[in-house]
Length: 277
Image 1 (cartoon, one colour):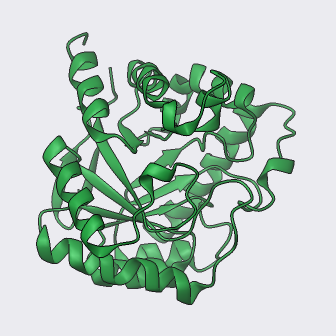
Image 2 (image 1 turned 90 degrees about the horizontal axis):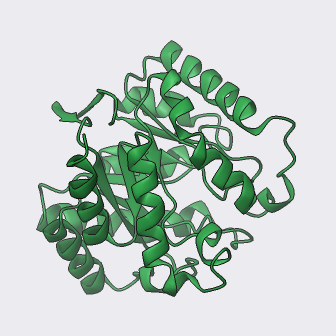
Image 3 (image 1 turned 120 degrees about the vertical axis):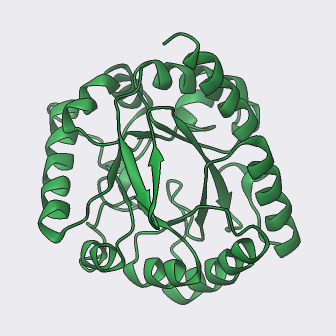
């Protein structure tokens, strides 16, 4: 059963005691899951409509691939990828709640100006020292993820003496910084696969309930990741069933937001698990 938490999105209180689903809209040509790559404007709007119809509560829009070894892109290119699509989505679907997936404060600012309502930062402010102050100034909820290094270096940064303890301390520090700046709604994401081996990711998933001690909403993003398909000796394209299994485990351990490529299946998992509470 999920803890009781709410977040304030543009004056609307969102109750997370019933877990929510965040659909992924990748505006990149090189996402690790080919089926999620959306670069055509019509395709973006079709995907948005489908996700909303299937029950997505949030849409996570990103223009910088954070897969391991992803090519770095300029801030100008990232802005070009996300700002106009966000405007188009809000124009067509004004009820949509968009999260901007970026670690750059300027991208976050322009995306929020274009209509985004949350900031999802894989670096929790560690890759842009203006990010936390920008989020505080904009007054939007903030998703802080655990990662070491950058997408280009994180695979080499998986040595921990005590993984859970180090991740918990990381979030305690981030939450303290956010509190000092007046960021009221902080959502934490353990960062499965980010500077973590598959074994380490499974260890964190198994211990997910420990994160409730931080008293913040918990987002889980395992959708079609290598911890699934490499364990099953398959591919990202074949990892939907494995994703549903791990999403179910996450829900049973108190996850309050599932970040996914496949909305309908995640919504079904939420509905079924809710019958157990």
